[in-house]
Length: 431
Image 1 (cartoon, rainbow, N blue to C red):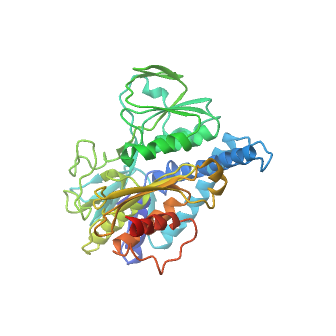
Image 2: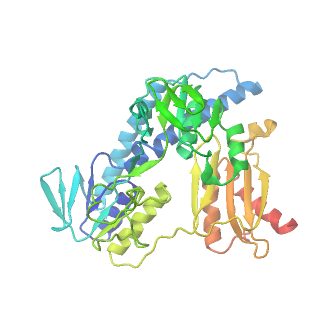
């Protein structure tokens, strides 16, 4: 029995069903989870339009084209919803096609009887239960917080806000600042501490703010006192605009919080096999916290289902690629084996597809690597370039295979790994 049809639950369900297990997948609302219906895919869709607007503006300034781009946000939102419906139809058929019994409804768990009750009436017994219920926007305890929107509401905007105030300093804040500033909004980002601190790189933060976020002001070390229907009142004064919360997420763990151990923030506590304090219940994805990423959730779901099926598999968090989706992808690494203990070097991004016409202004991005000079091994990579979200996973694969010095038999599509390879070669020759 699997509760939650996002990336973790759906892929686990299909894998188990294809191996002739009797699998029931229960989803409260829409298949595809937060990624498809509220978060990642929505950001990607909006970012595609934002990139077109920015590139068009650049082409006009260079005198290459003469055009005026007008953004119709209501039509964009409508087409995104239409596309989501088509994708849901496809992945529902795909999921059922593997033999999964797919059930729509709200679930609750009776661990004593080992049954899941759907919509207070239908009961489904289980041998093993996998909880993949995801997360929801964190709503901070701020007076007037009901006046703010969250990422779940962005497709409800009737028009592009003239001014947008984003509360939060992480990747979601950066992504929506990029989108709406490209559409013409004046954006203020309010950070409780520092902006994009998860990068751990002030040079990268400065590059992003200066080159990728137009019409955007970042305010750090801000205390929010109140949110009104038209502004945010802070320790620095009042900042007007439509308010968007991007202050993180909270786990949807209420369904089992009295059945398994959870931490102080409500995340379900699991071991390296994704098993909870109840030996018959496993959990994966956002509901367990950690690095919140669709591929990580999918990996955790596959680890959980393999252990449920009797295989001894552990989650691998050694090297994890992550990306902030802006006009240039900001790709970076997290994980147990990532460090900055070696020598760091920075090179400009390569000119190529999606960056060639920024060569004249020098805005082709940057690539940074941290290298252990004795062993030649790569400790860390950060790339702000087109296609860096494709390049970094390849680099991590090479690093995991202990083959990061040998690119002789690897031909990439320029400019994916080209810039990172060039930087590695620079180290070998000159450091």
